[in-house]
Length: 223
Image (tube, rainbow, N blue to C red; front, side, top):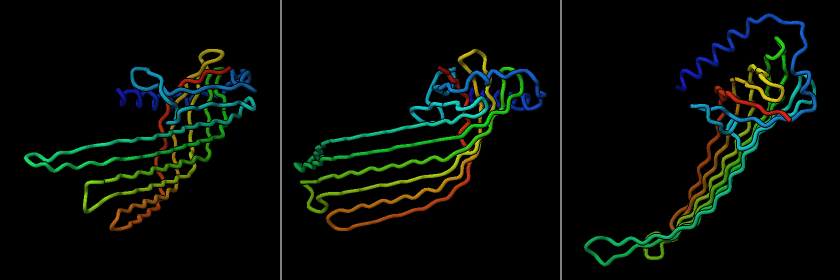
């Protein structure tokens, strides 16, 4: 199903690229000053998060120009306790954990439209994105004579640029379908600090990567 959908999108973009320019007024001319919410169309035509973010919206500040933004925020707190009894013994191990996580992703793109016919337009765009992730955890082992606690702190920061190309079809006055793909350039830095009552350890990693961007097949609702 996924391969078939990707093939349909690719063929659609290929065919549309040979449609000649028309002199008629584009439906995009009516979108200036309008906002849109965007949703991803997944397998079996279910709606999910567009471009991997919880919220994705668009604003047309001109009849050929728009800005798009996506935002995701994730907060988590977990507390737990456990007791273990070794079989055929009276030995019991217990521990308690406390874990906190936070993540935020922000994506922004500037979109430039190139109308082809009344209700179809190509677009190109690009813009920066950032992601920050932090997770801290602490585990206490009150019955353990060797290791009585463990602490860990993980930070990951990623920033980069998305470049994309796609096509949008206005099939009604306030609704459109779009398909797009692109390329990403990003740099990430990762730090992990861990310790217990015997040692401390710090691990750092830095990475630069050029990779394919998201393949998005979505629907936009204008208002």
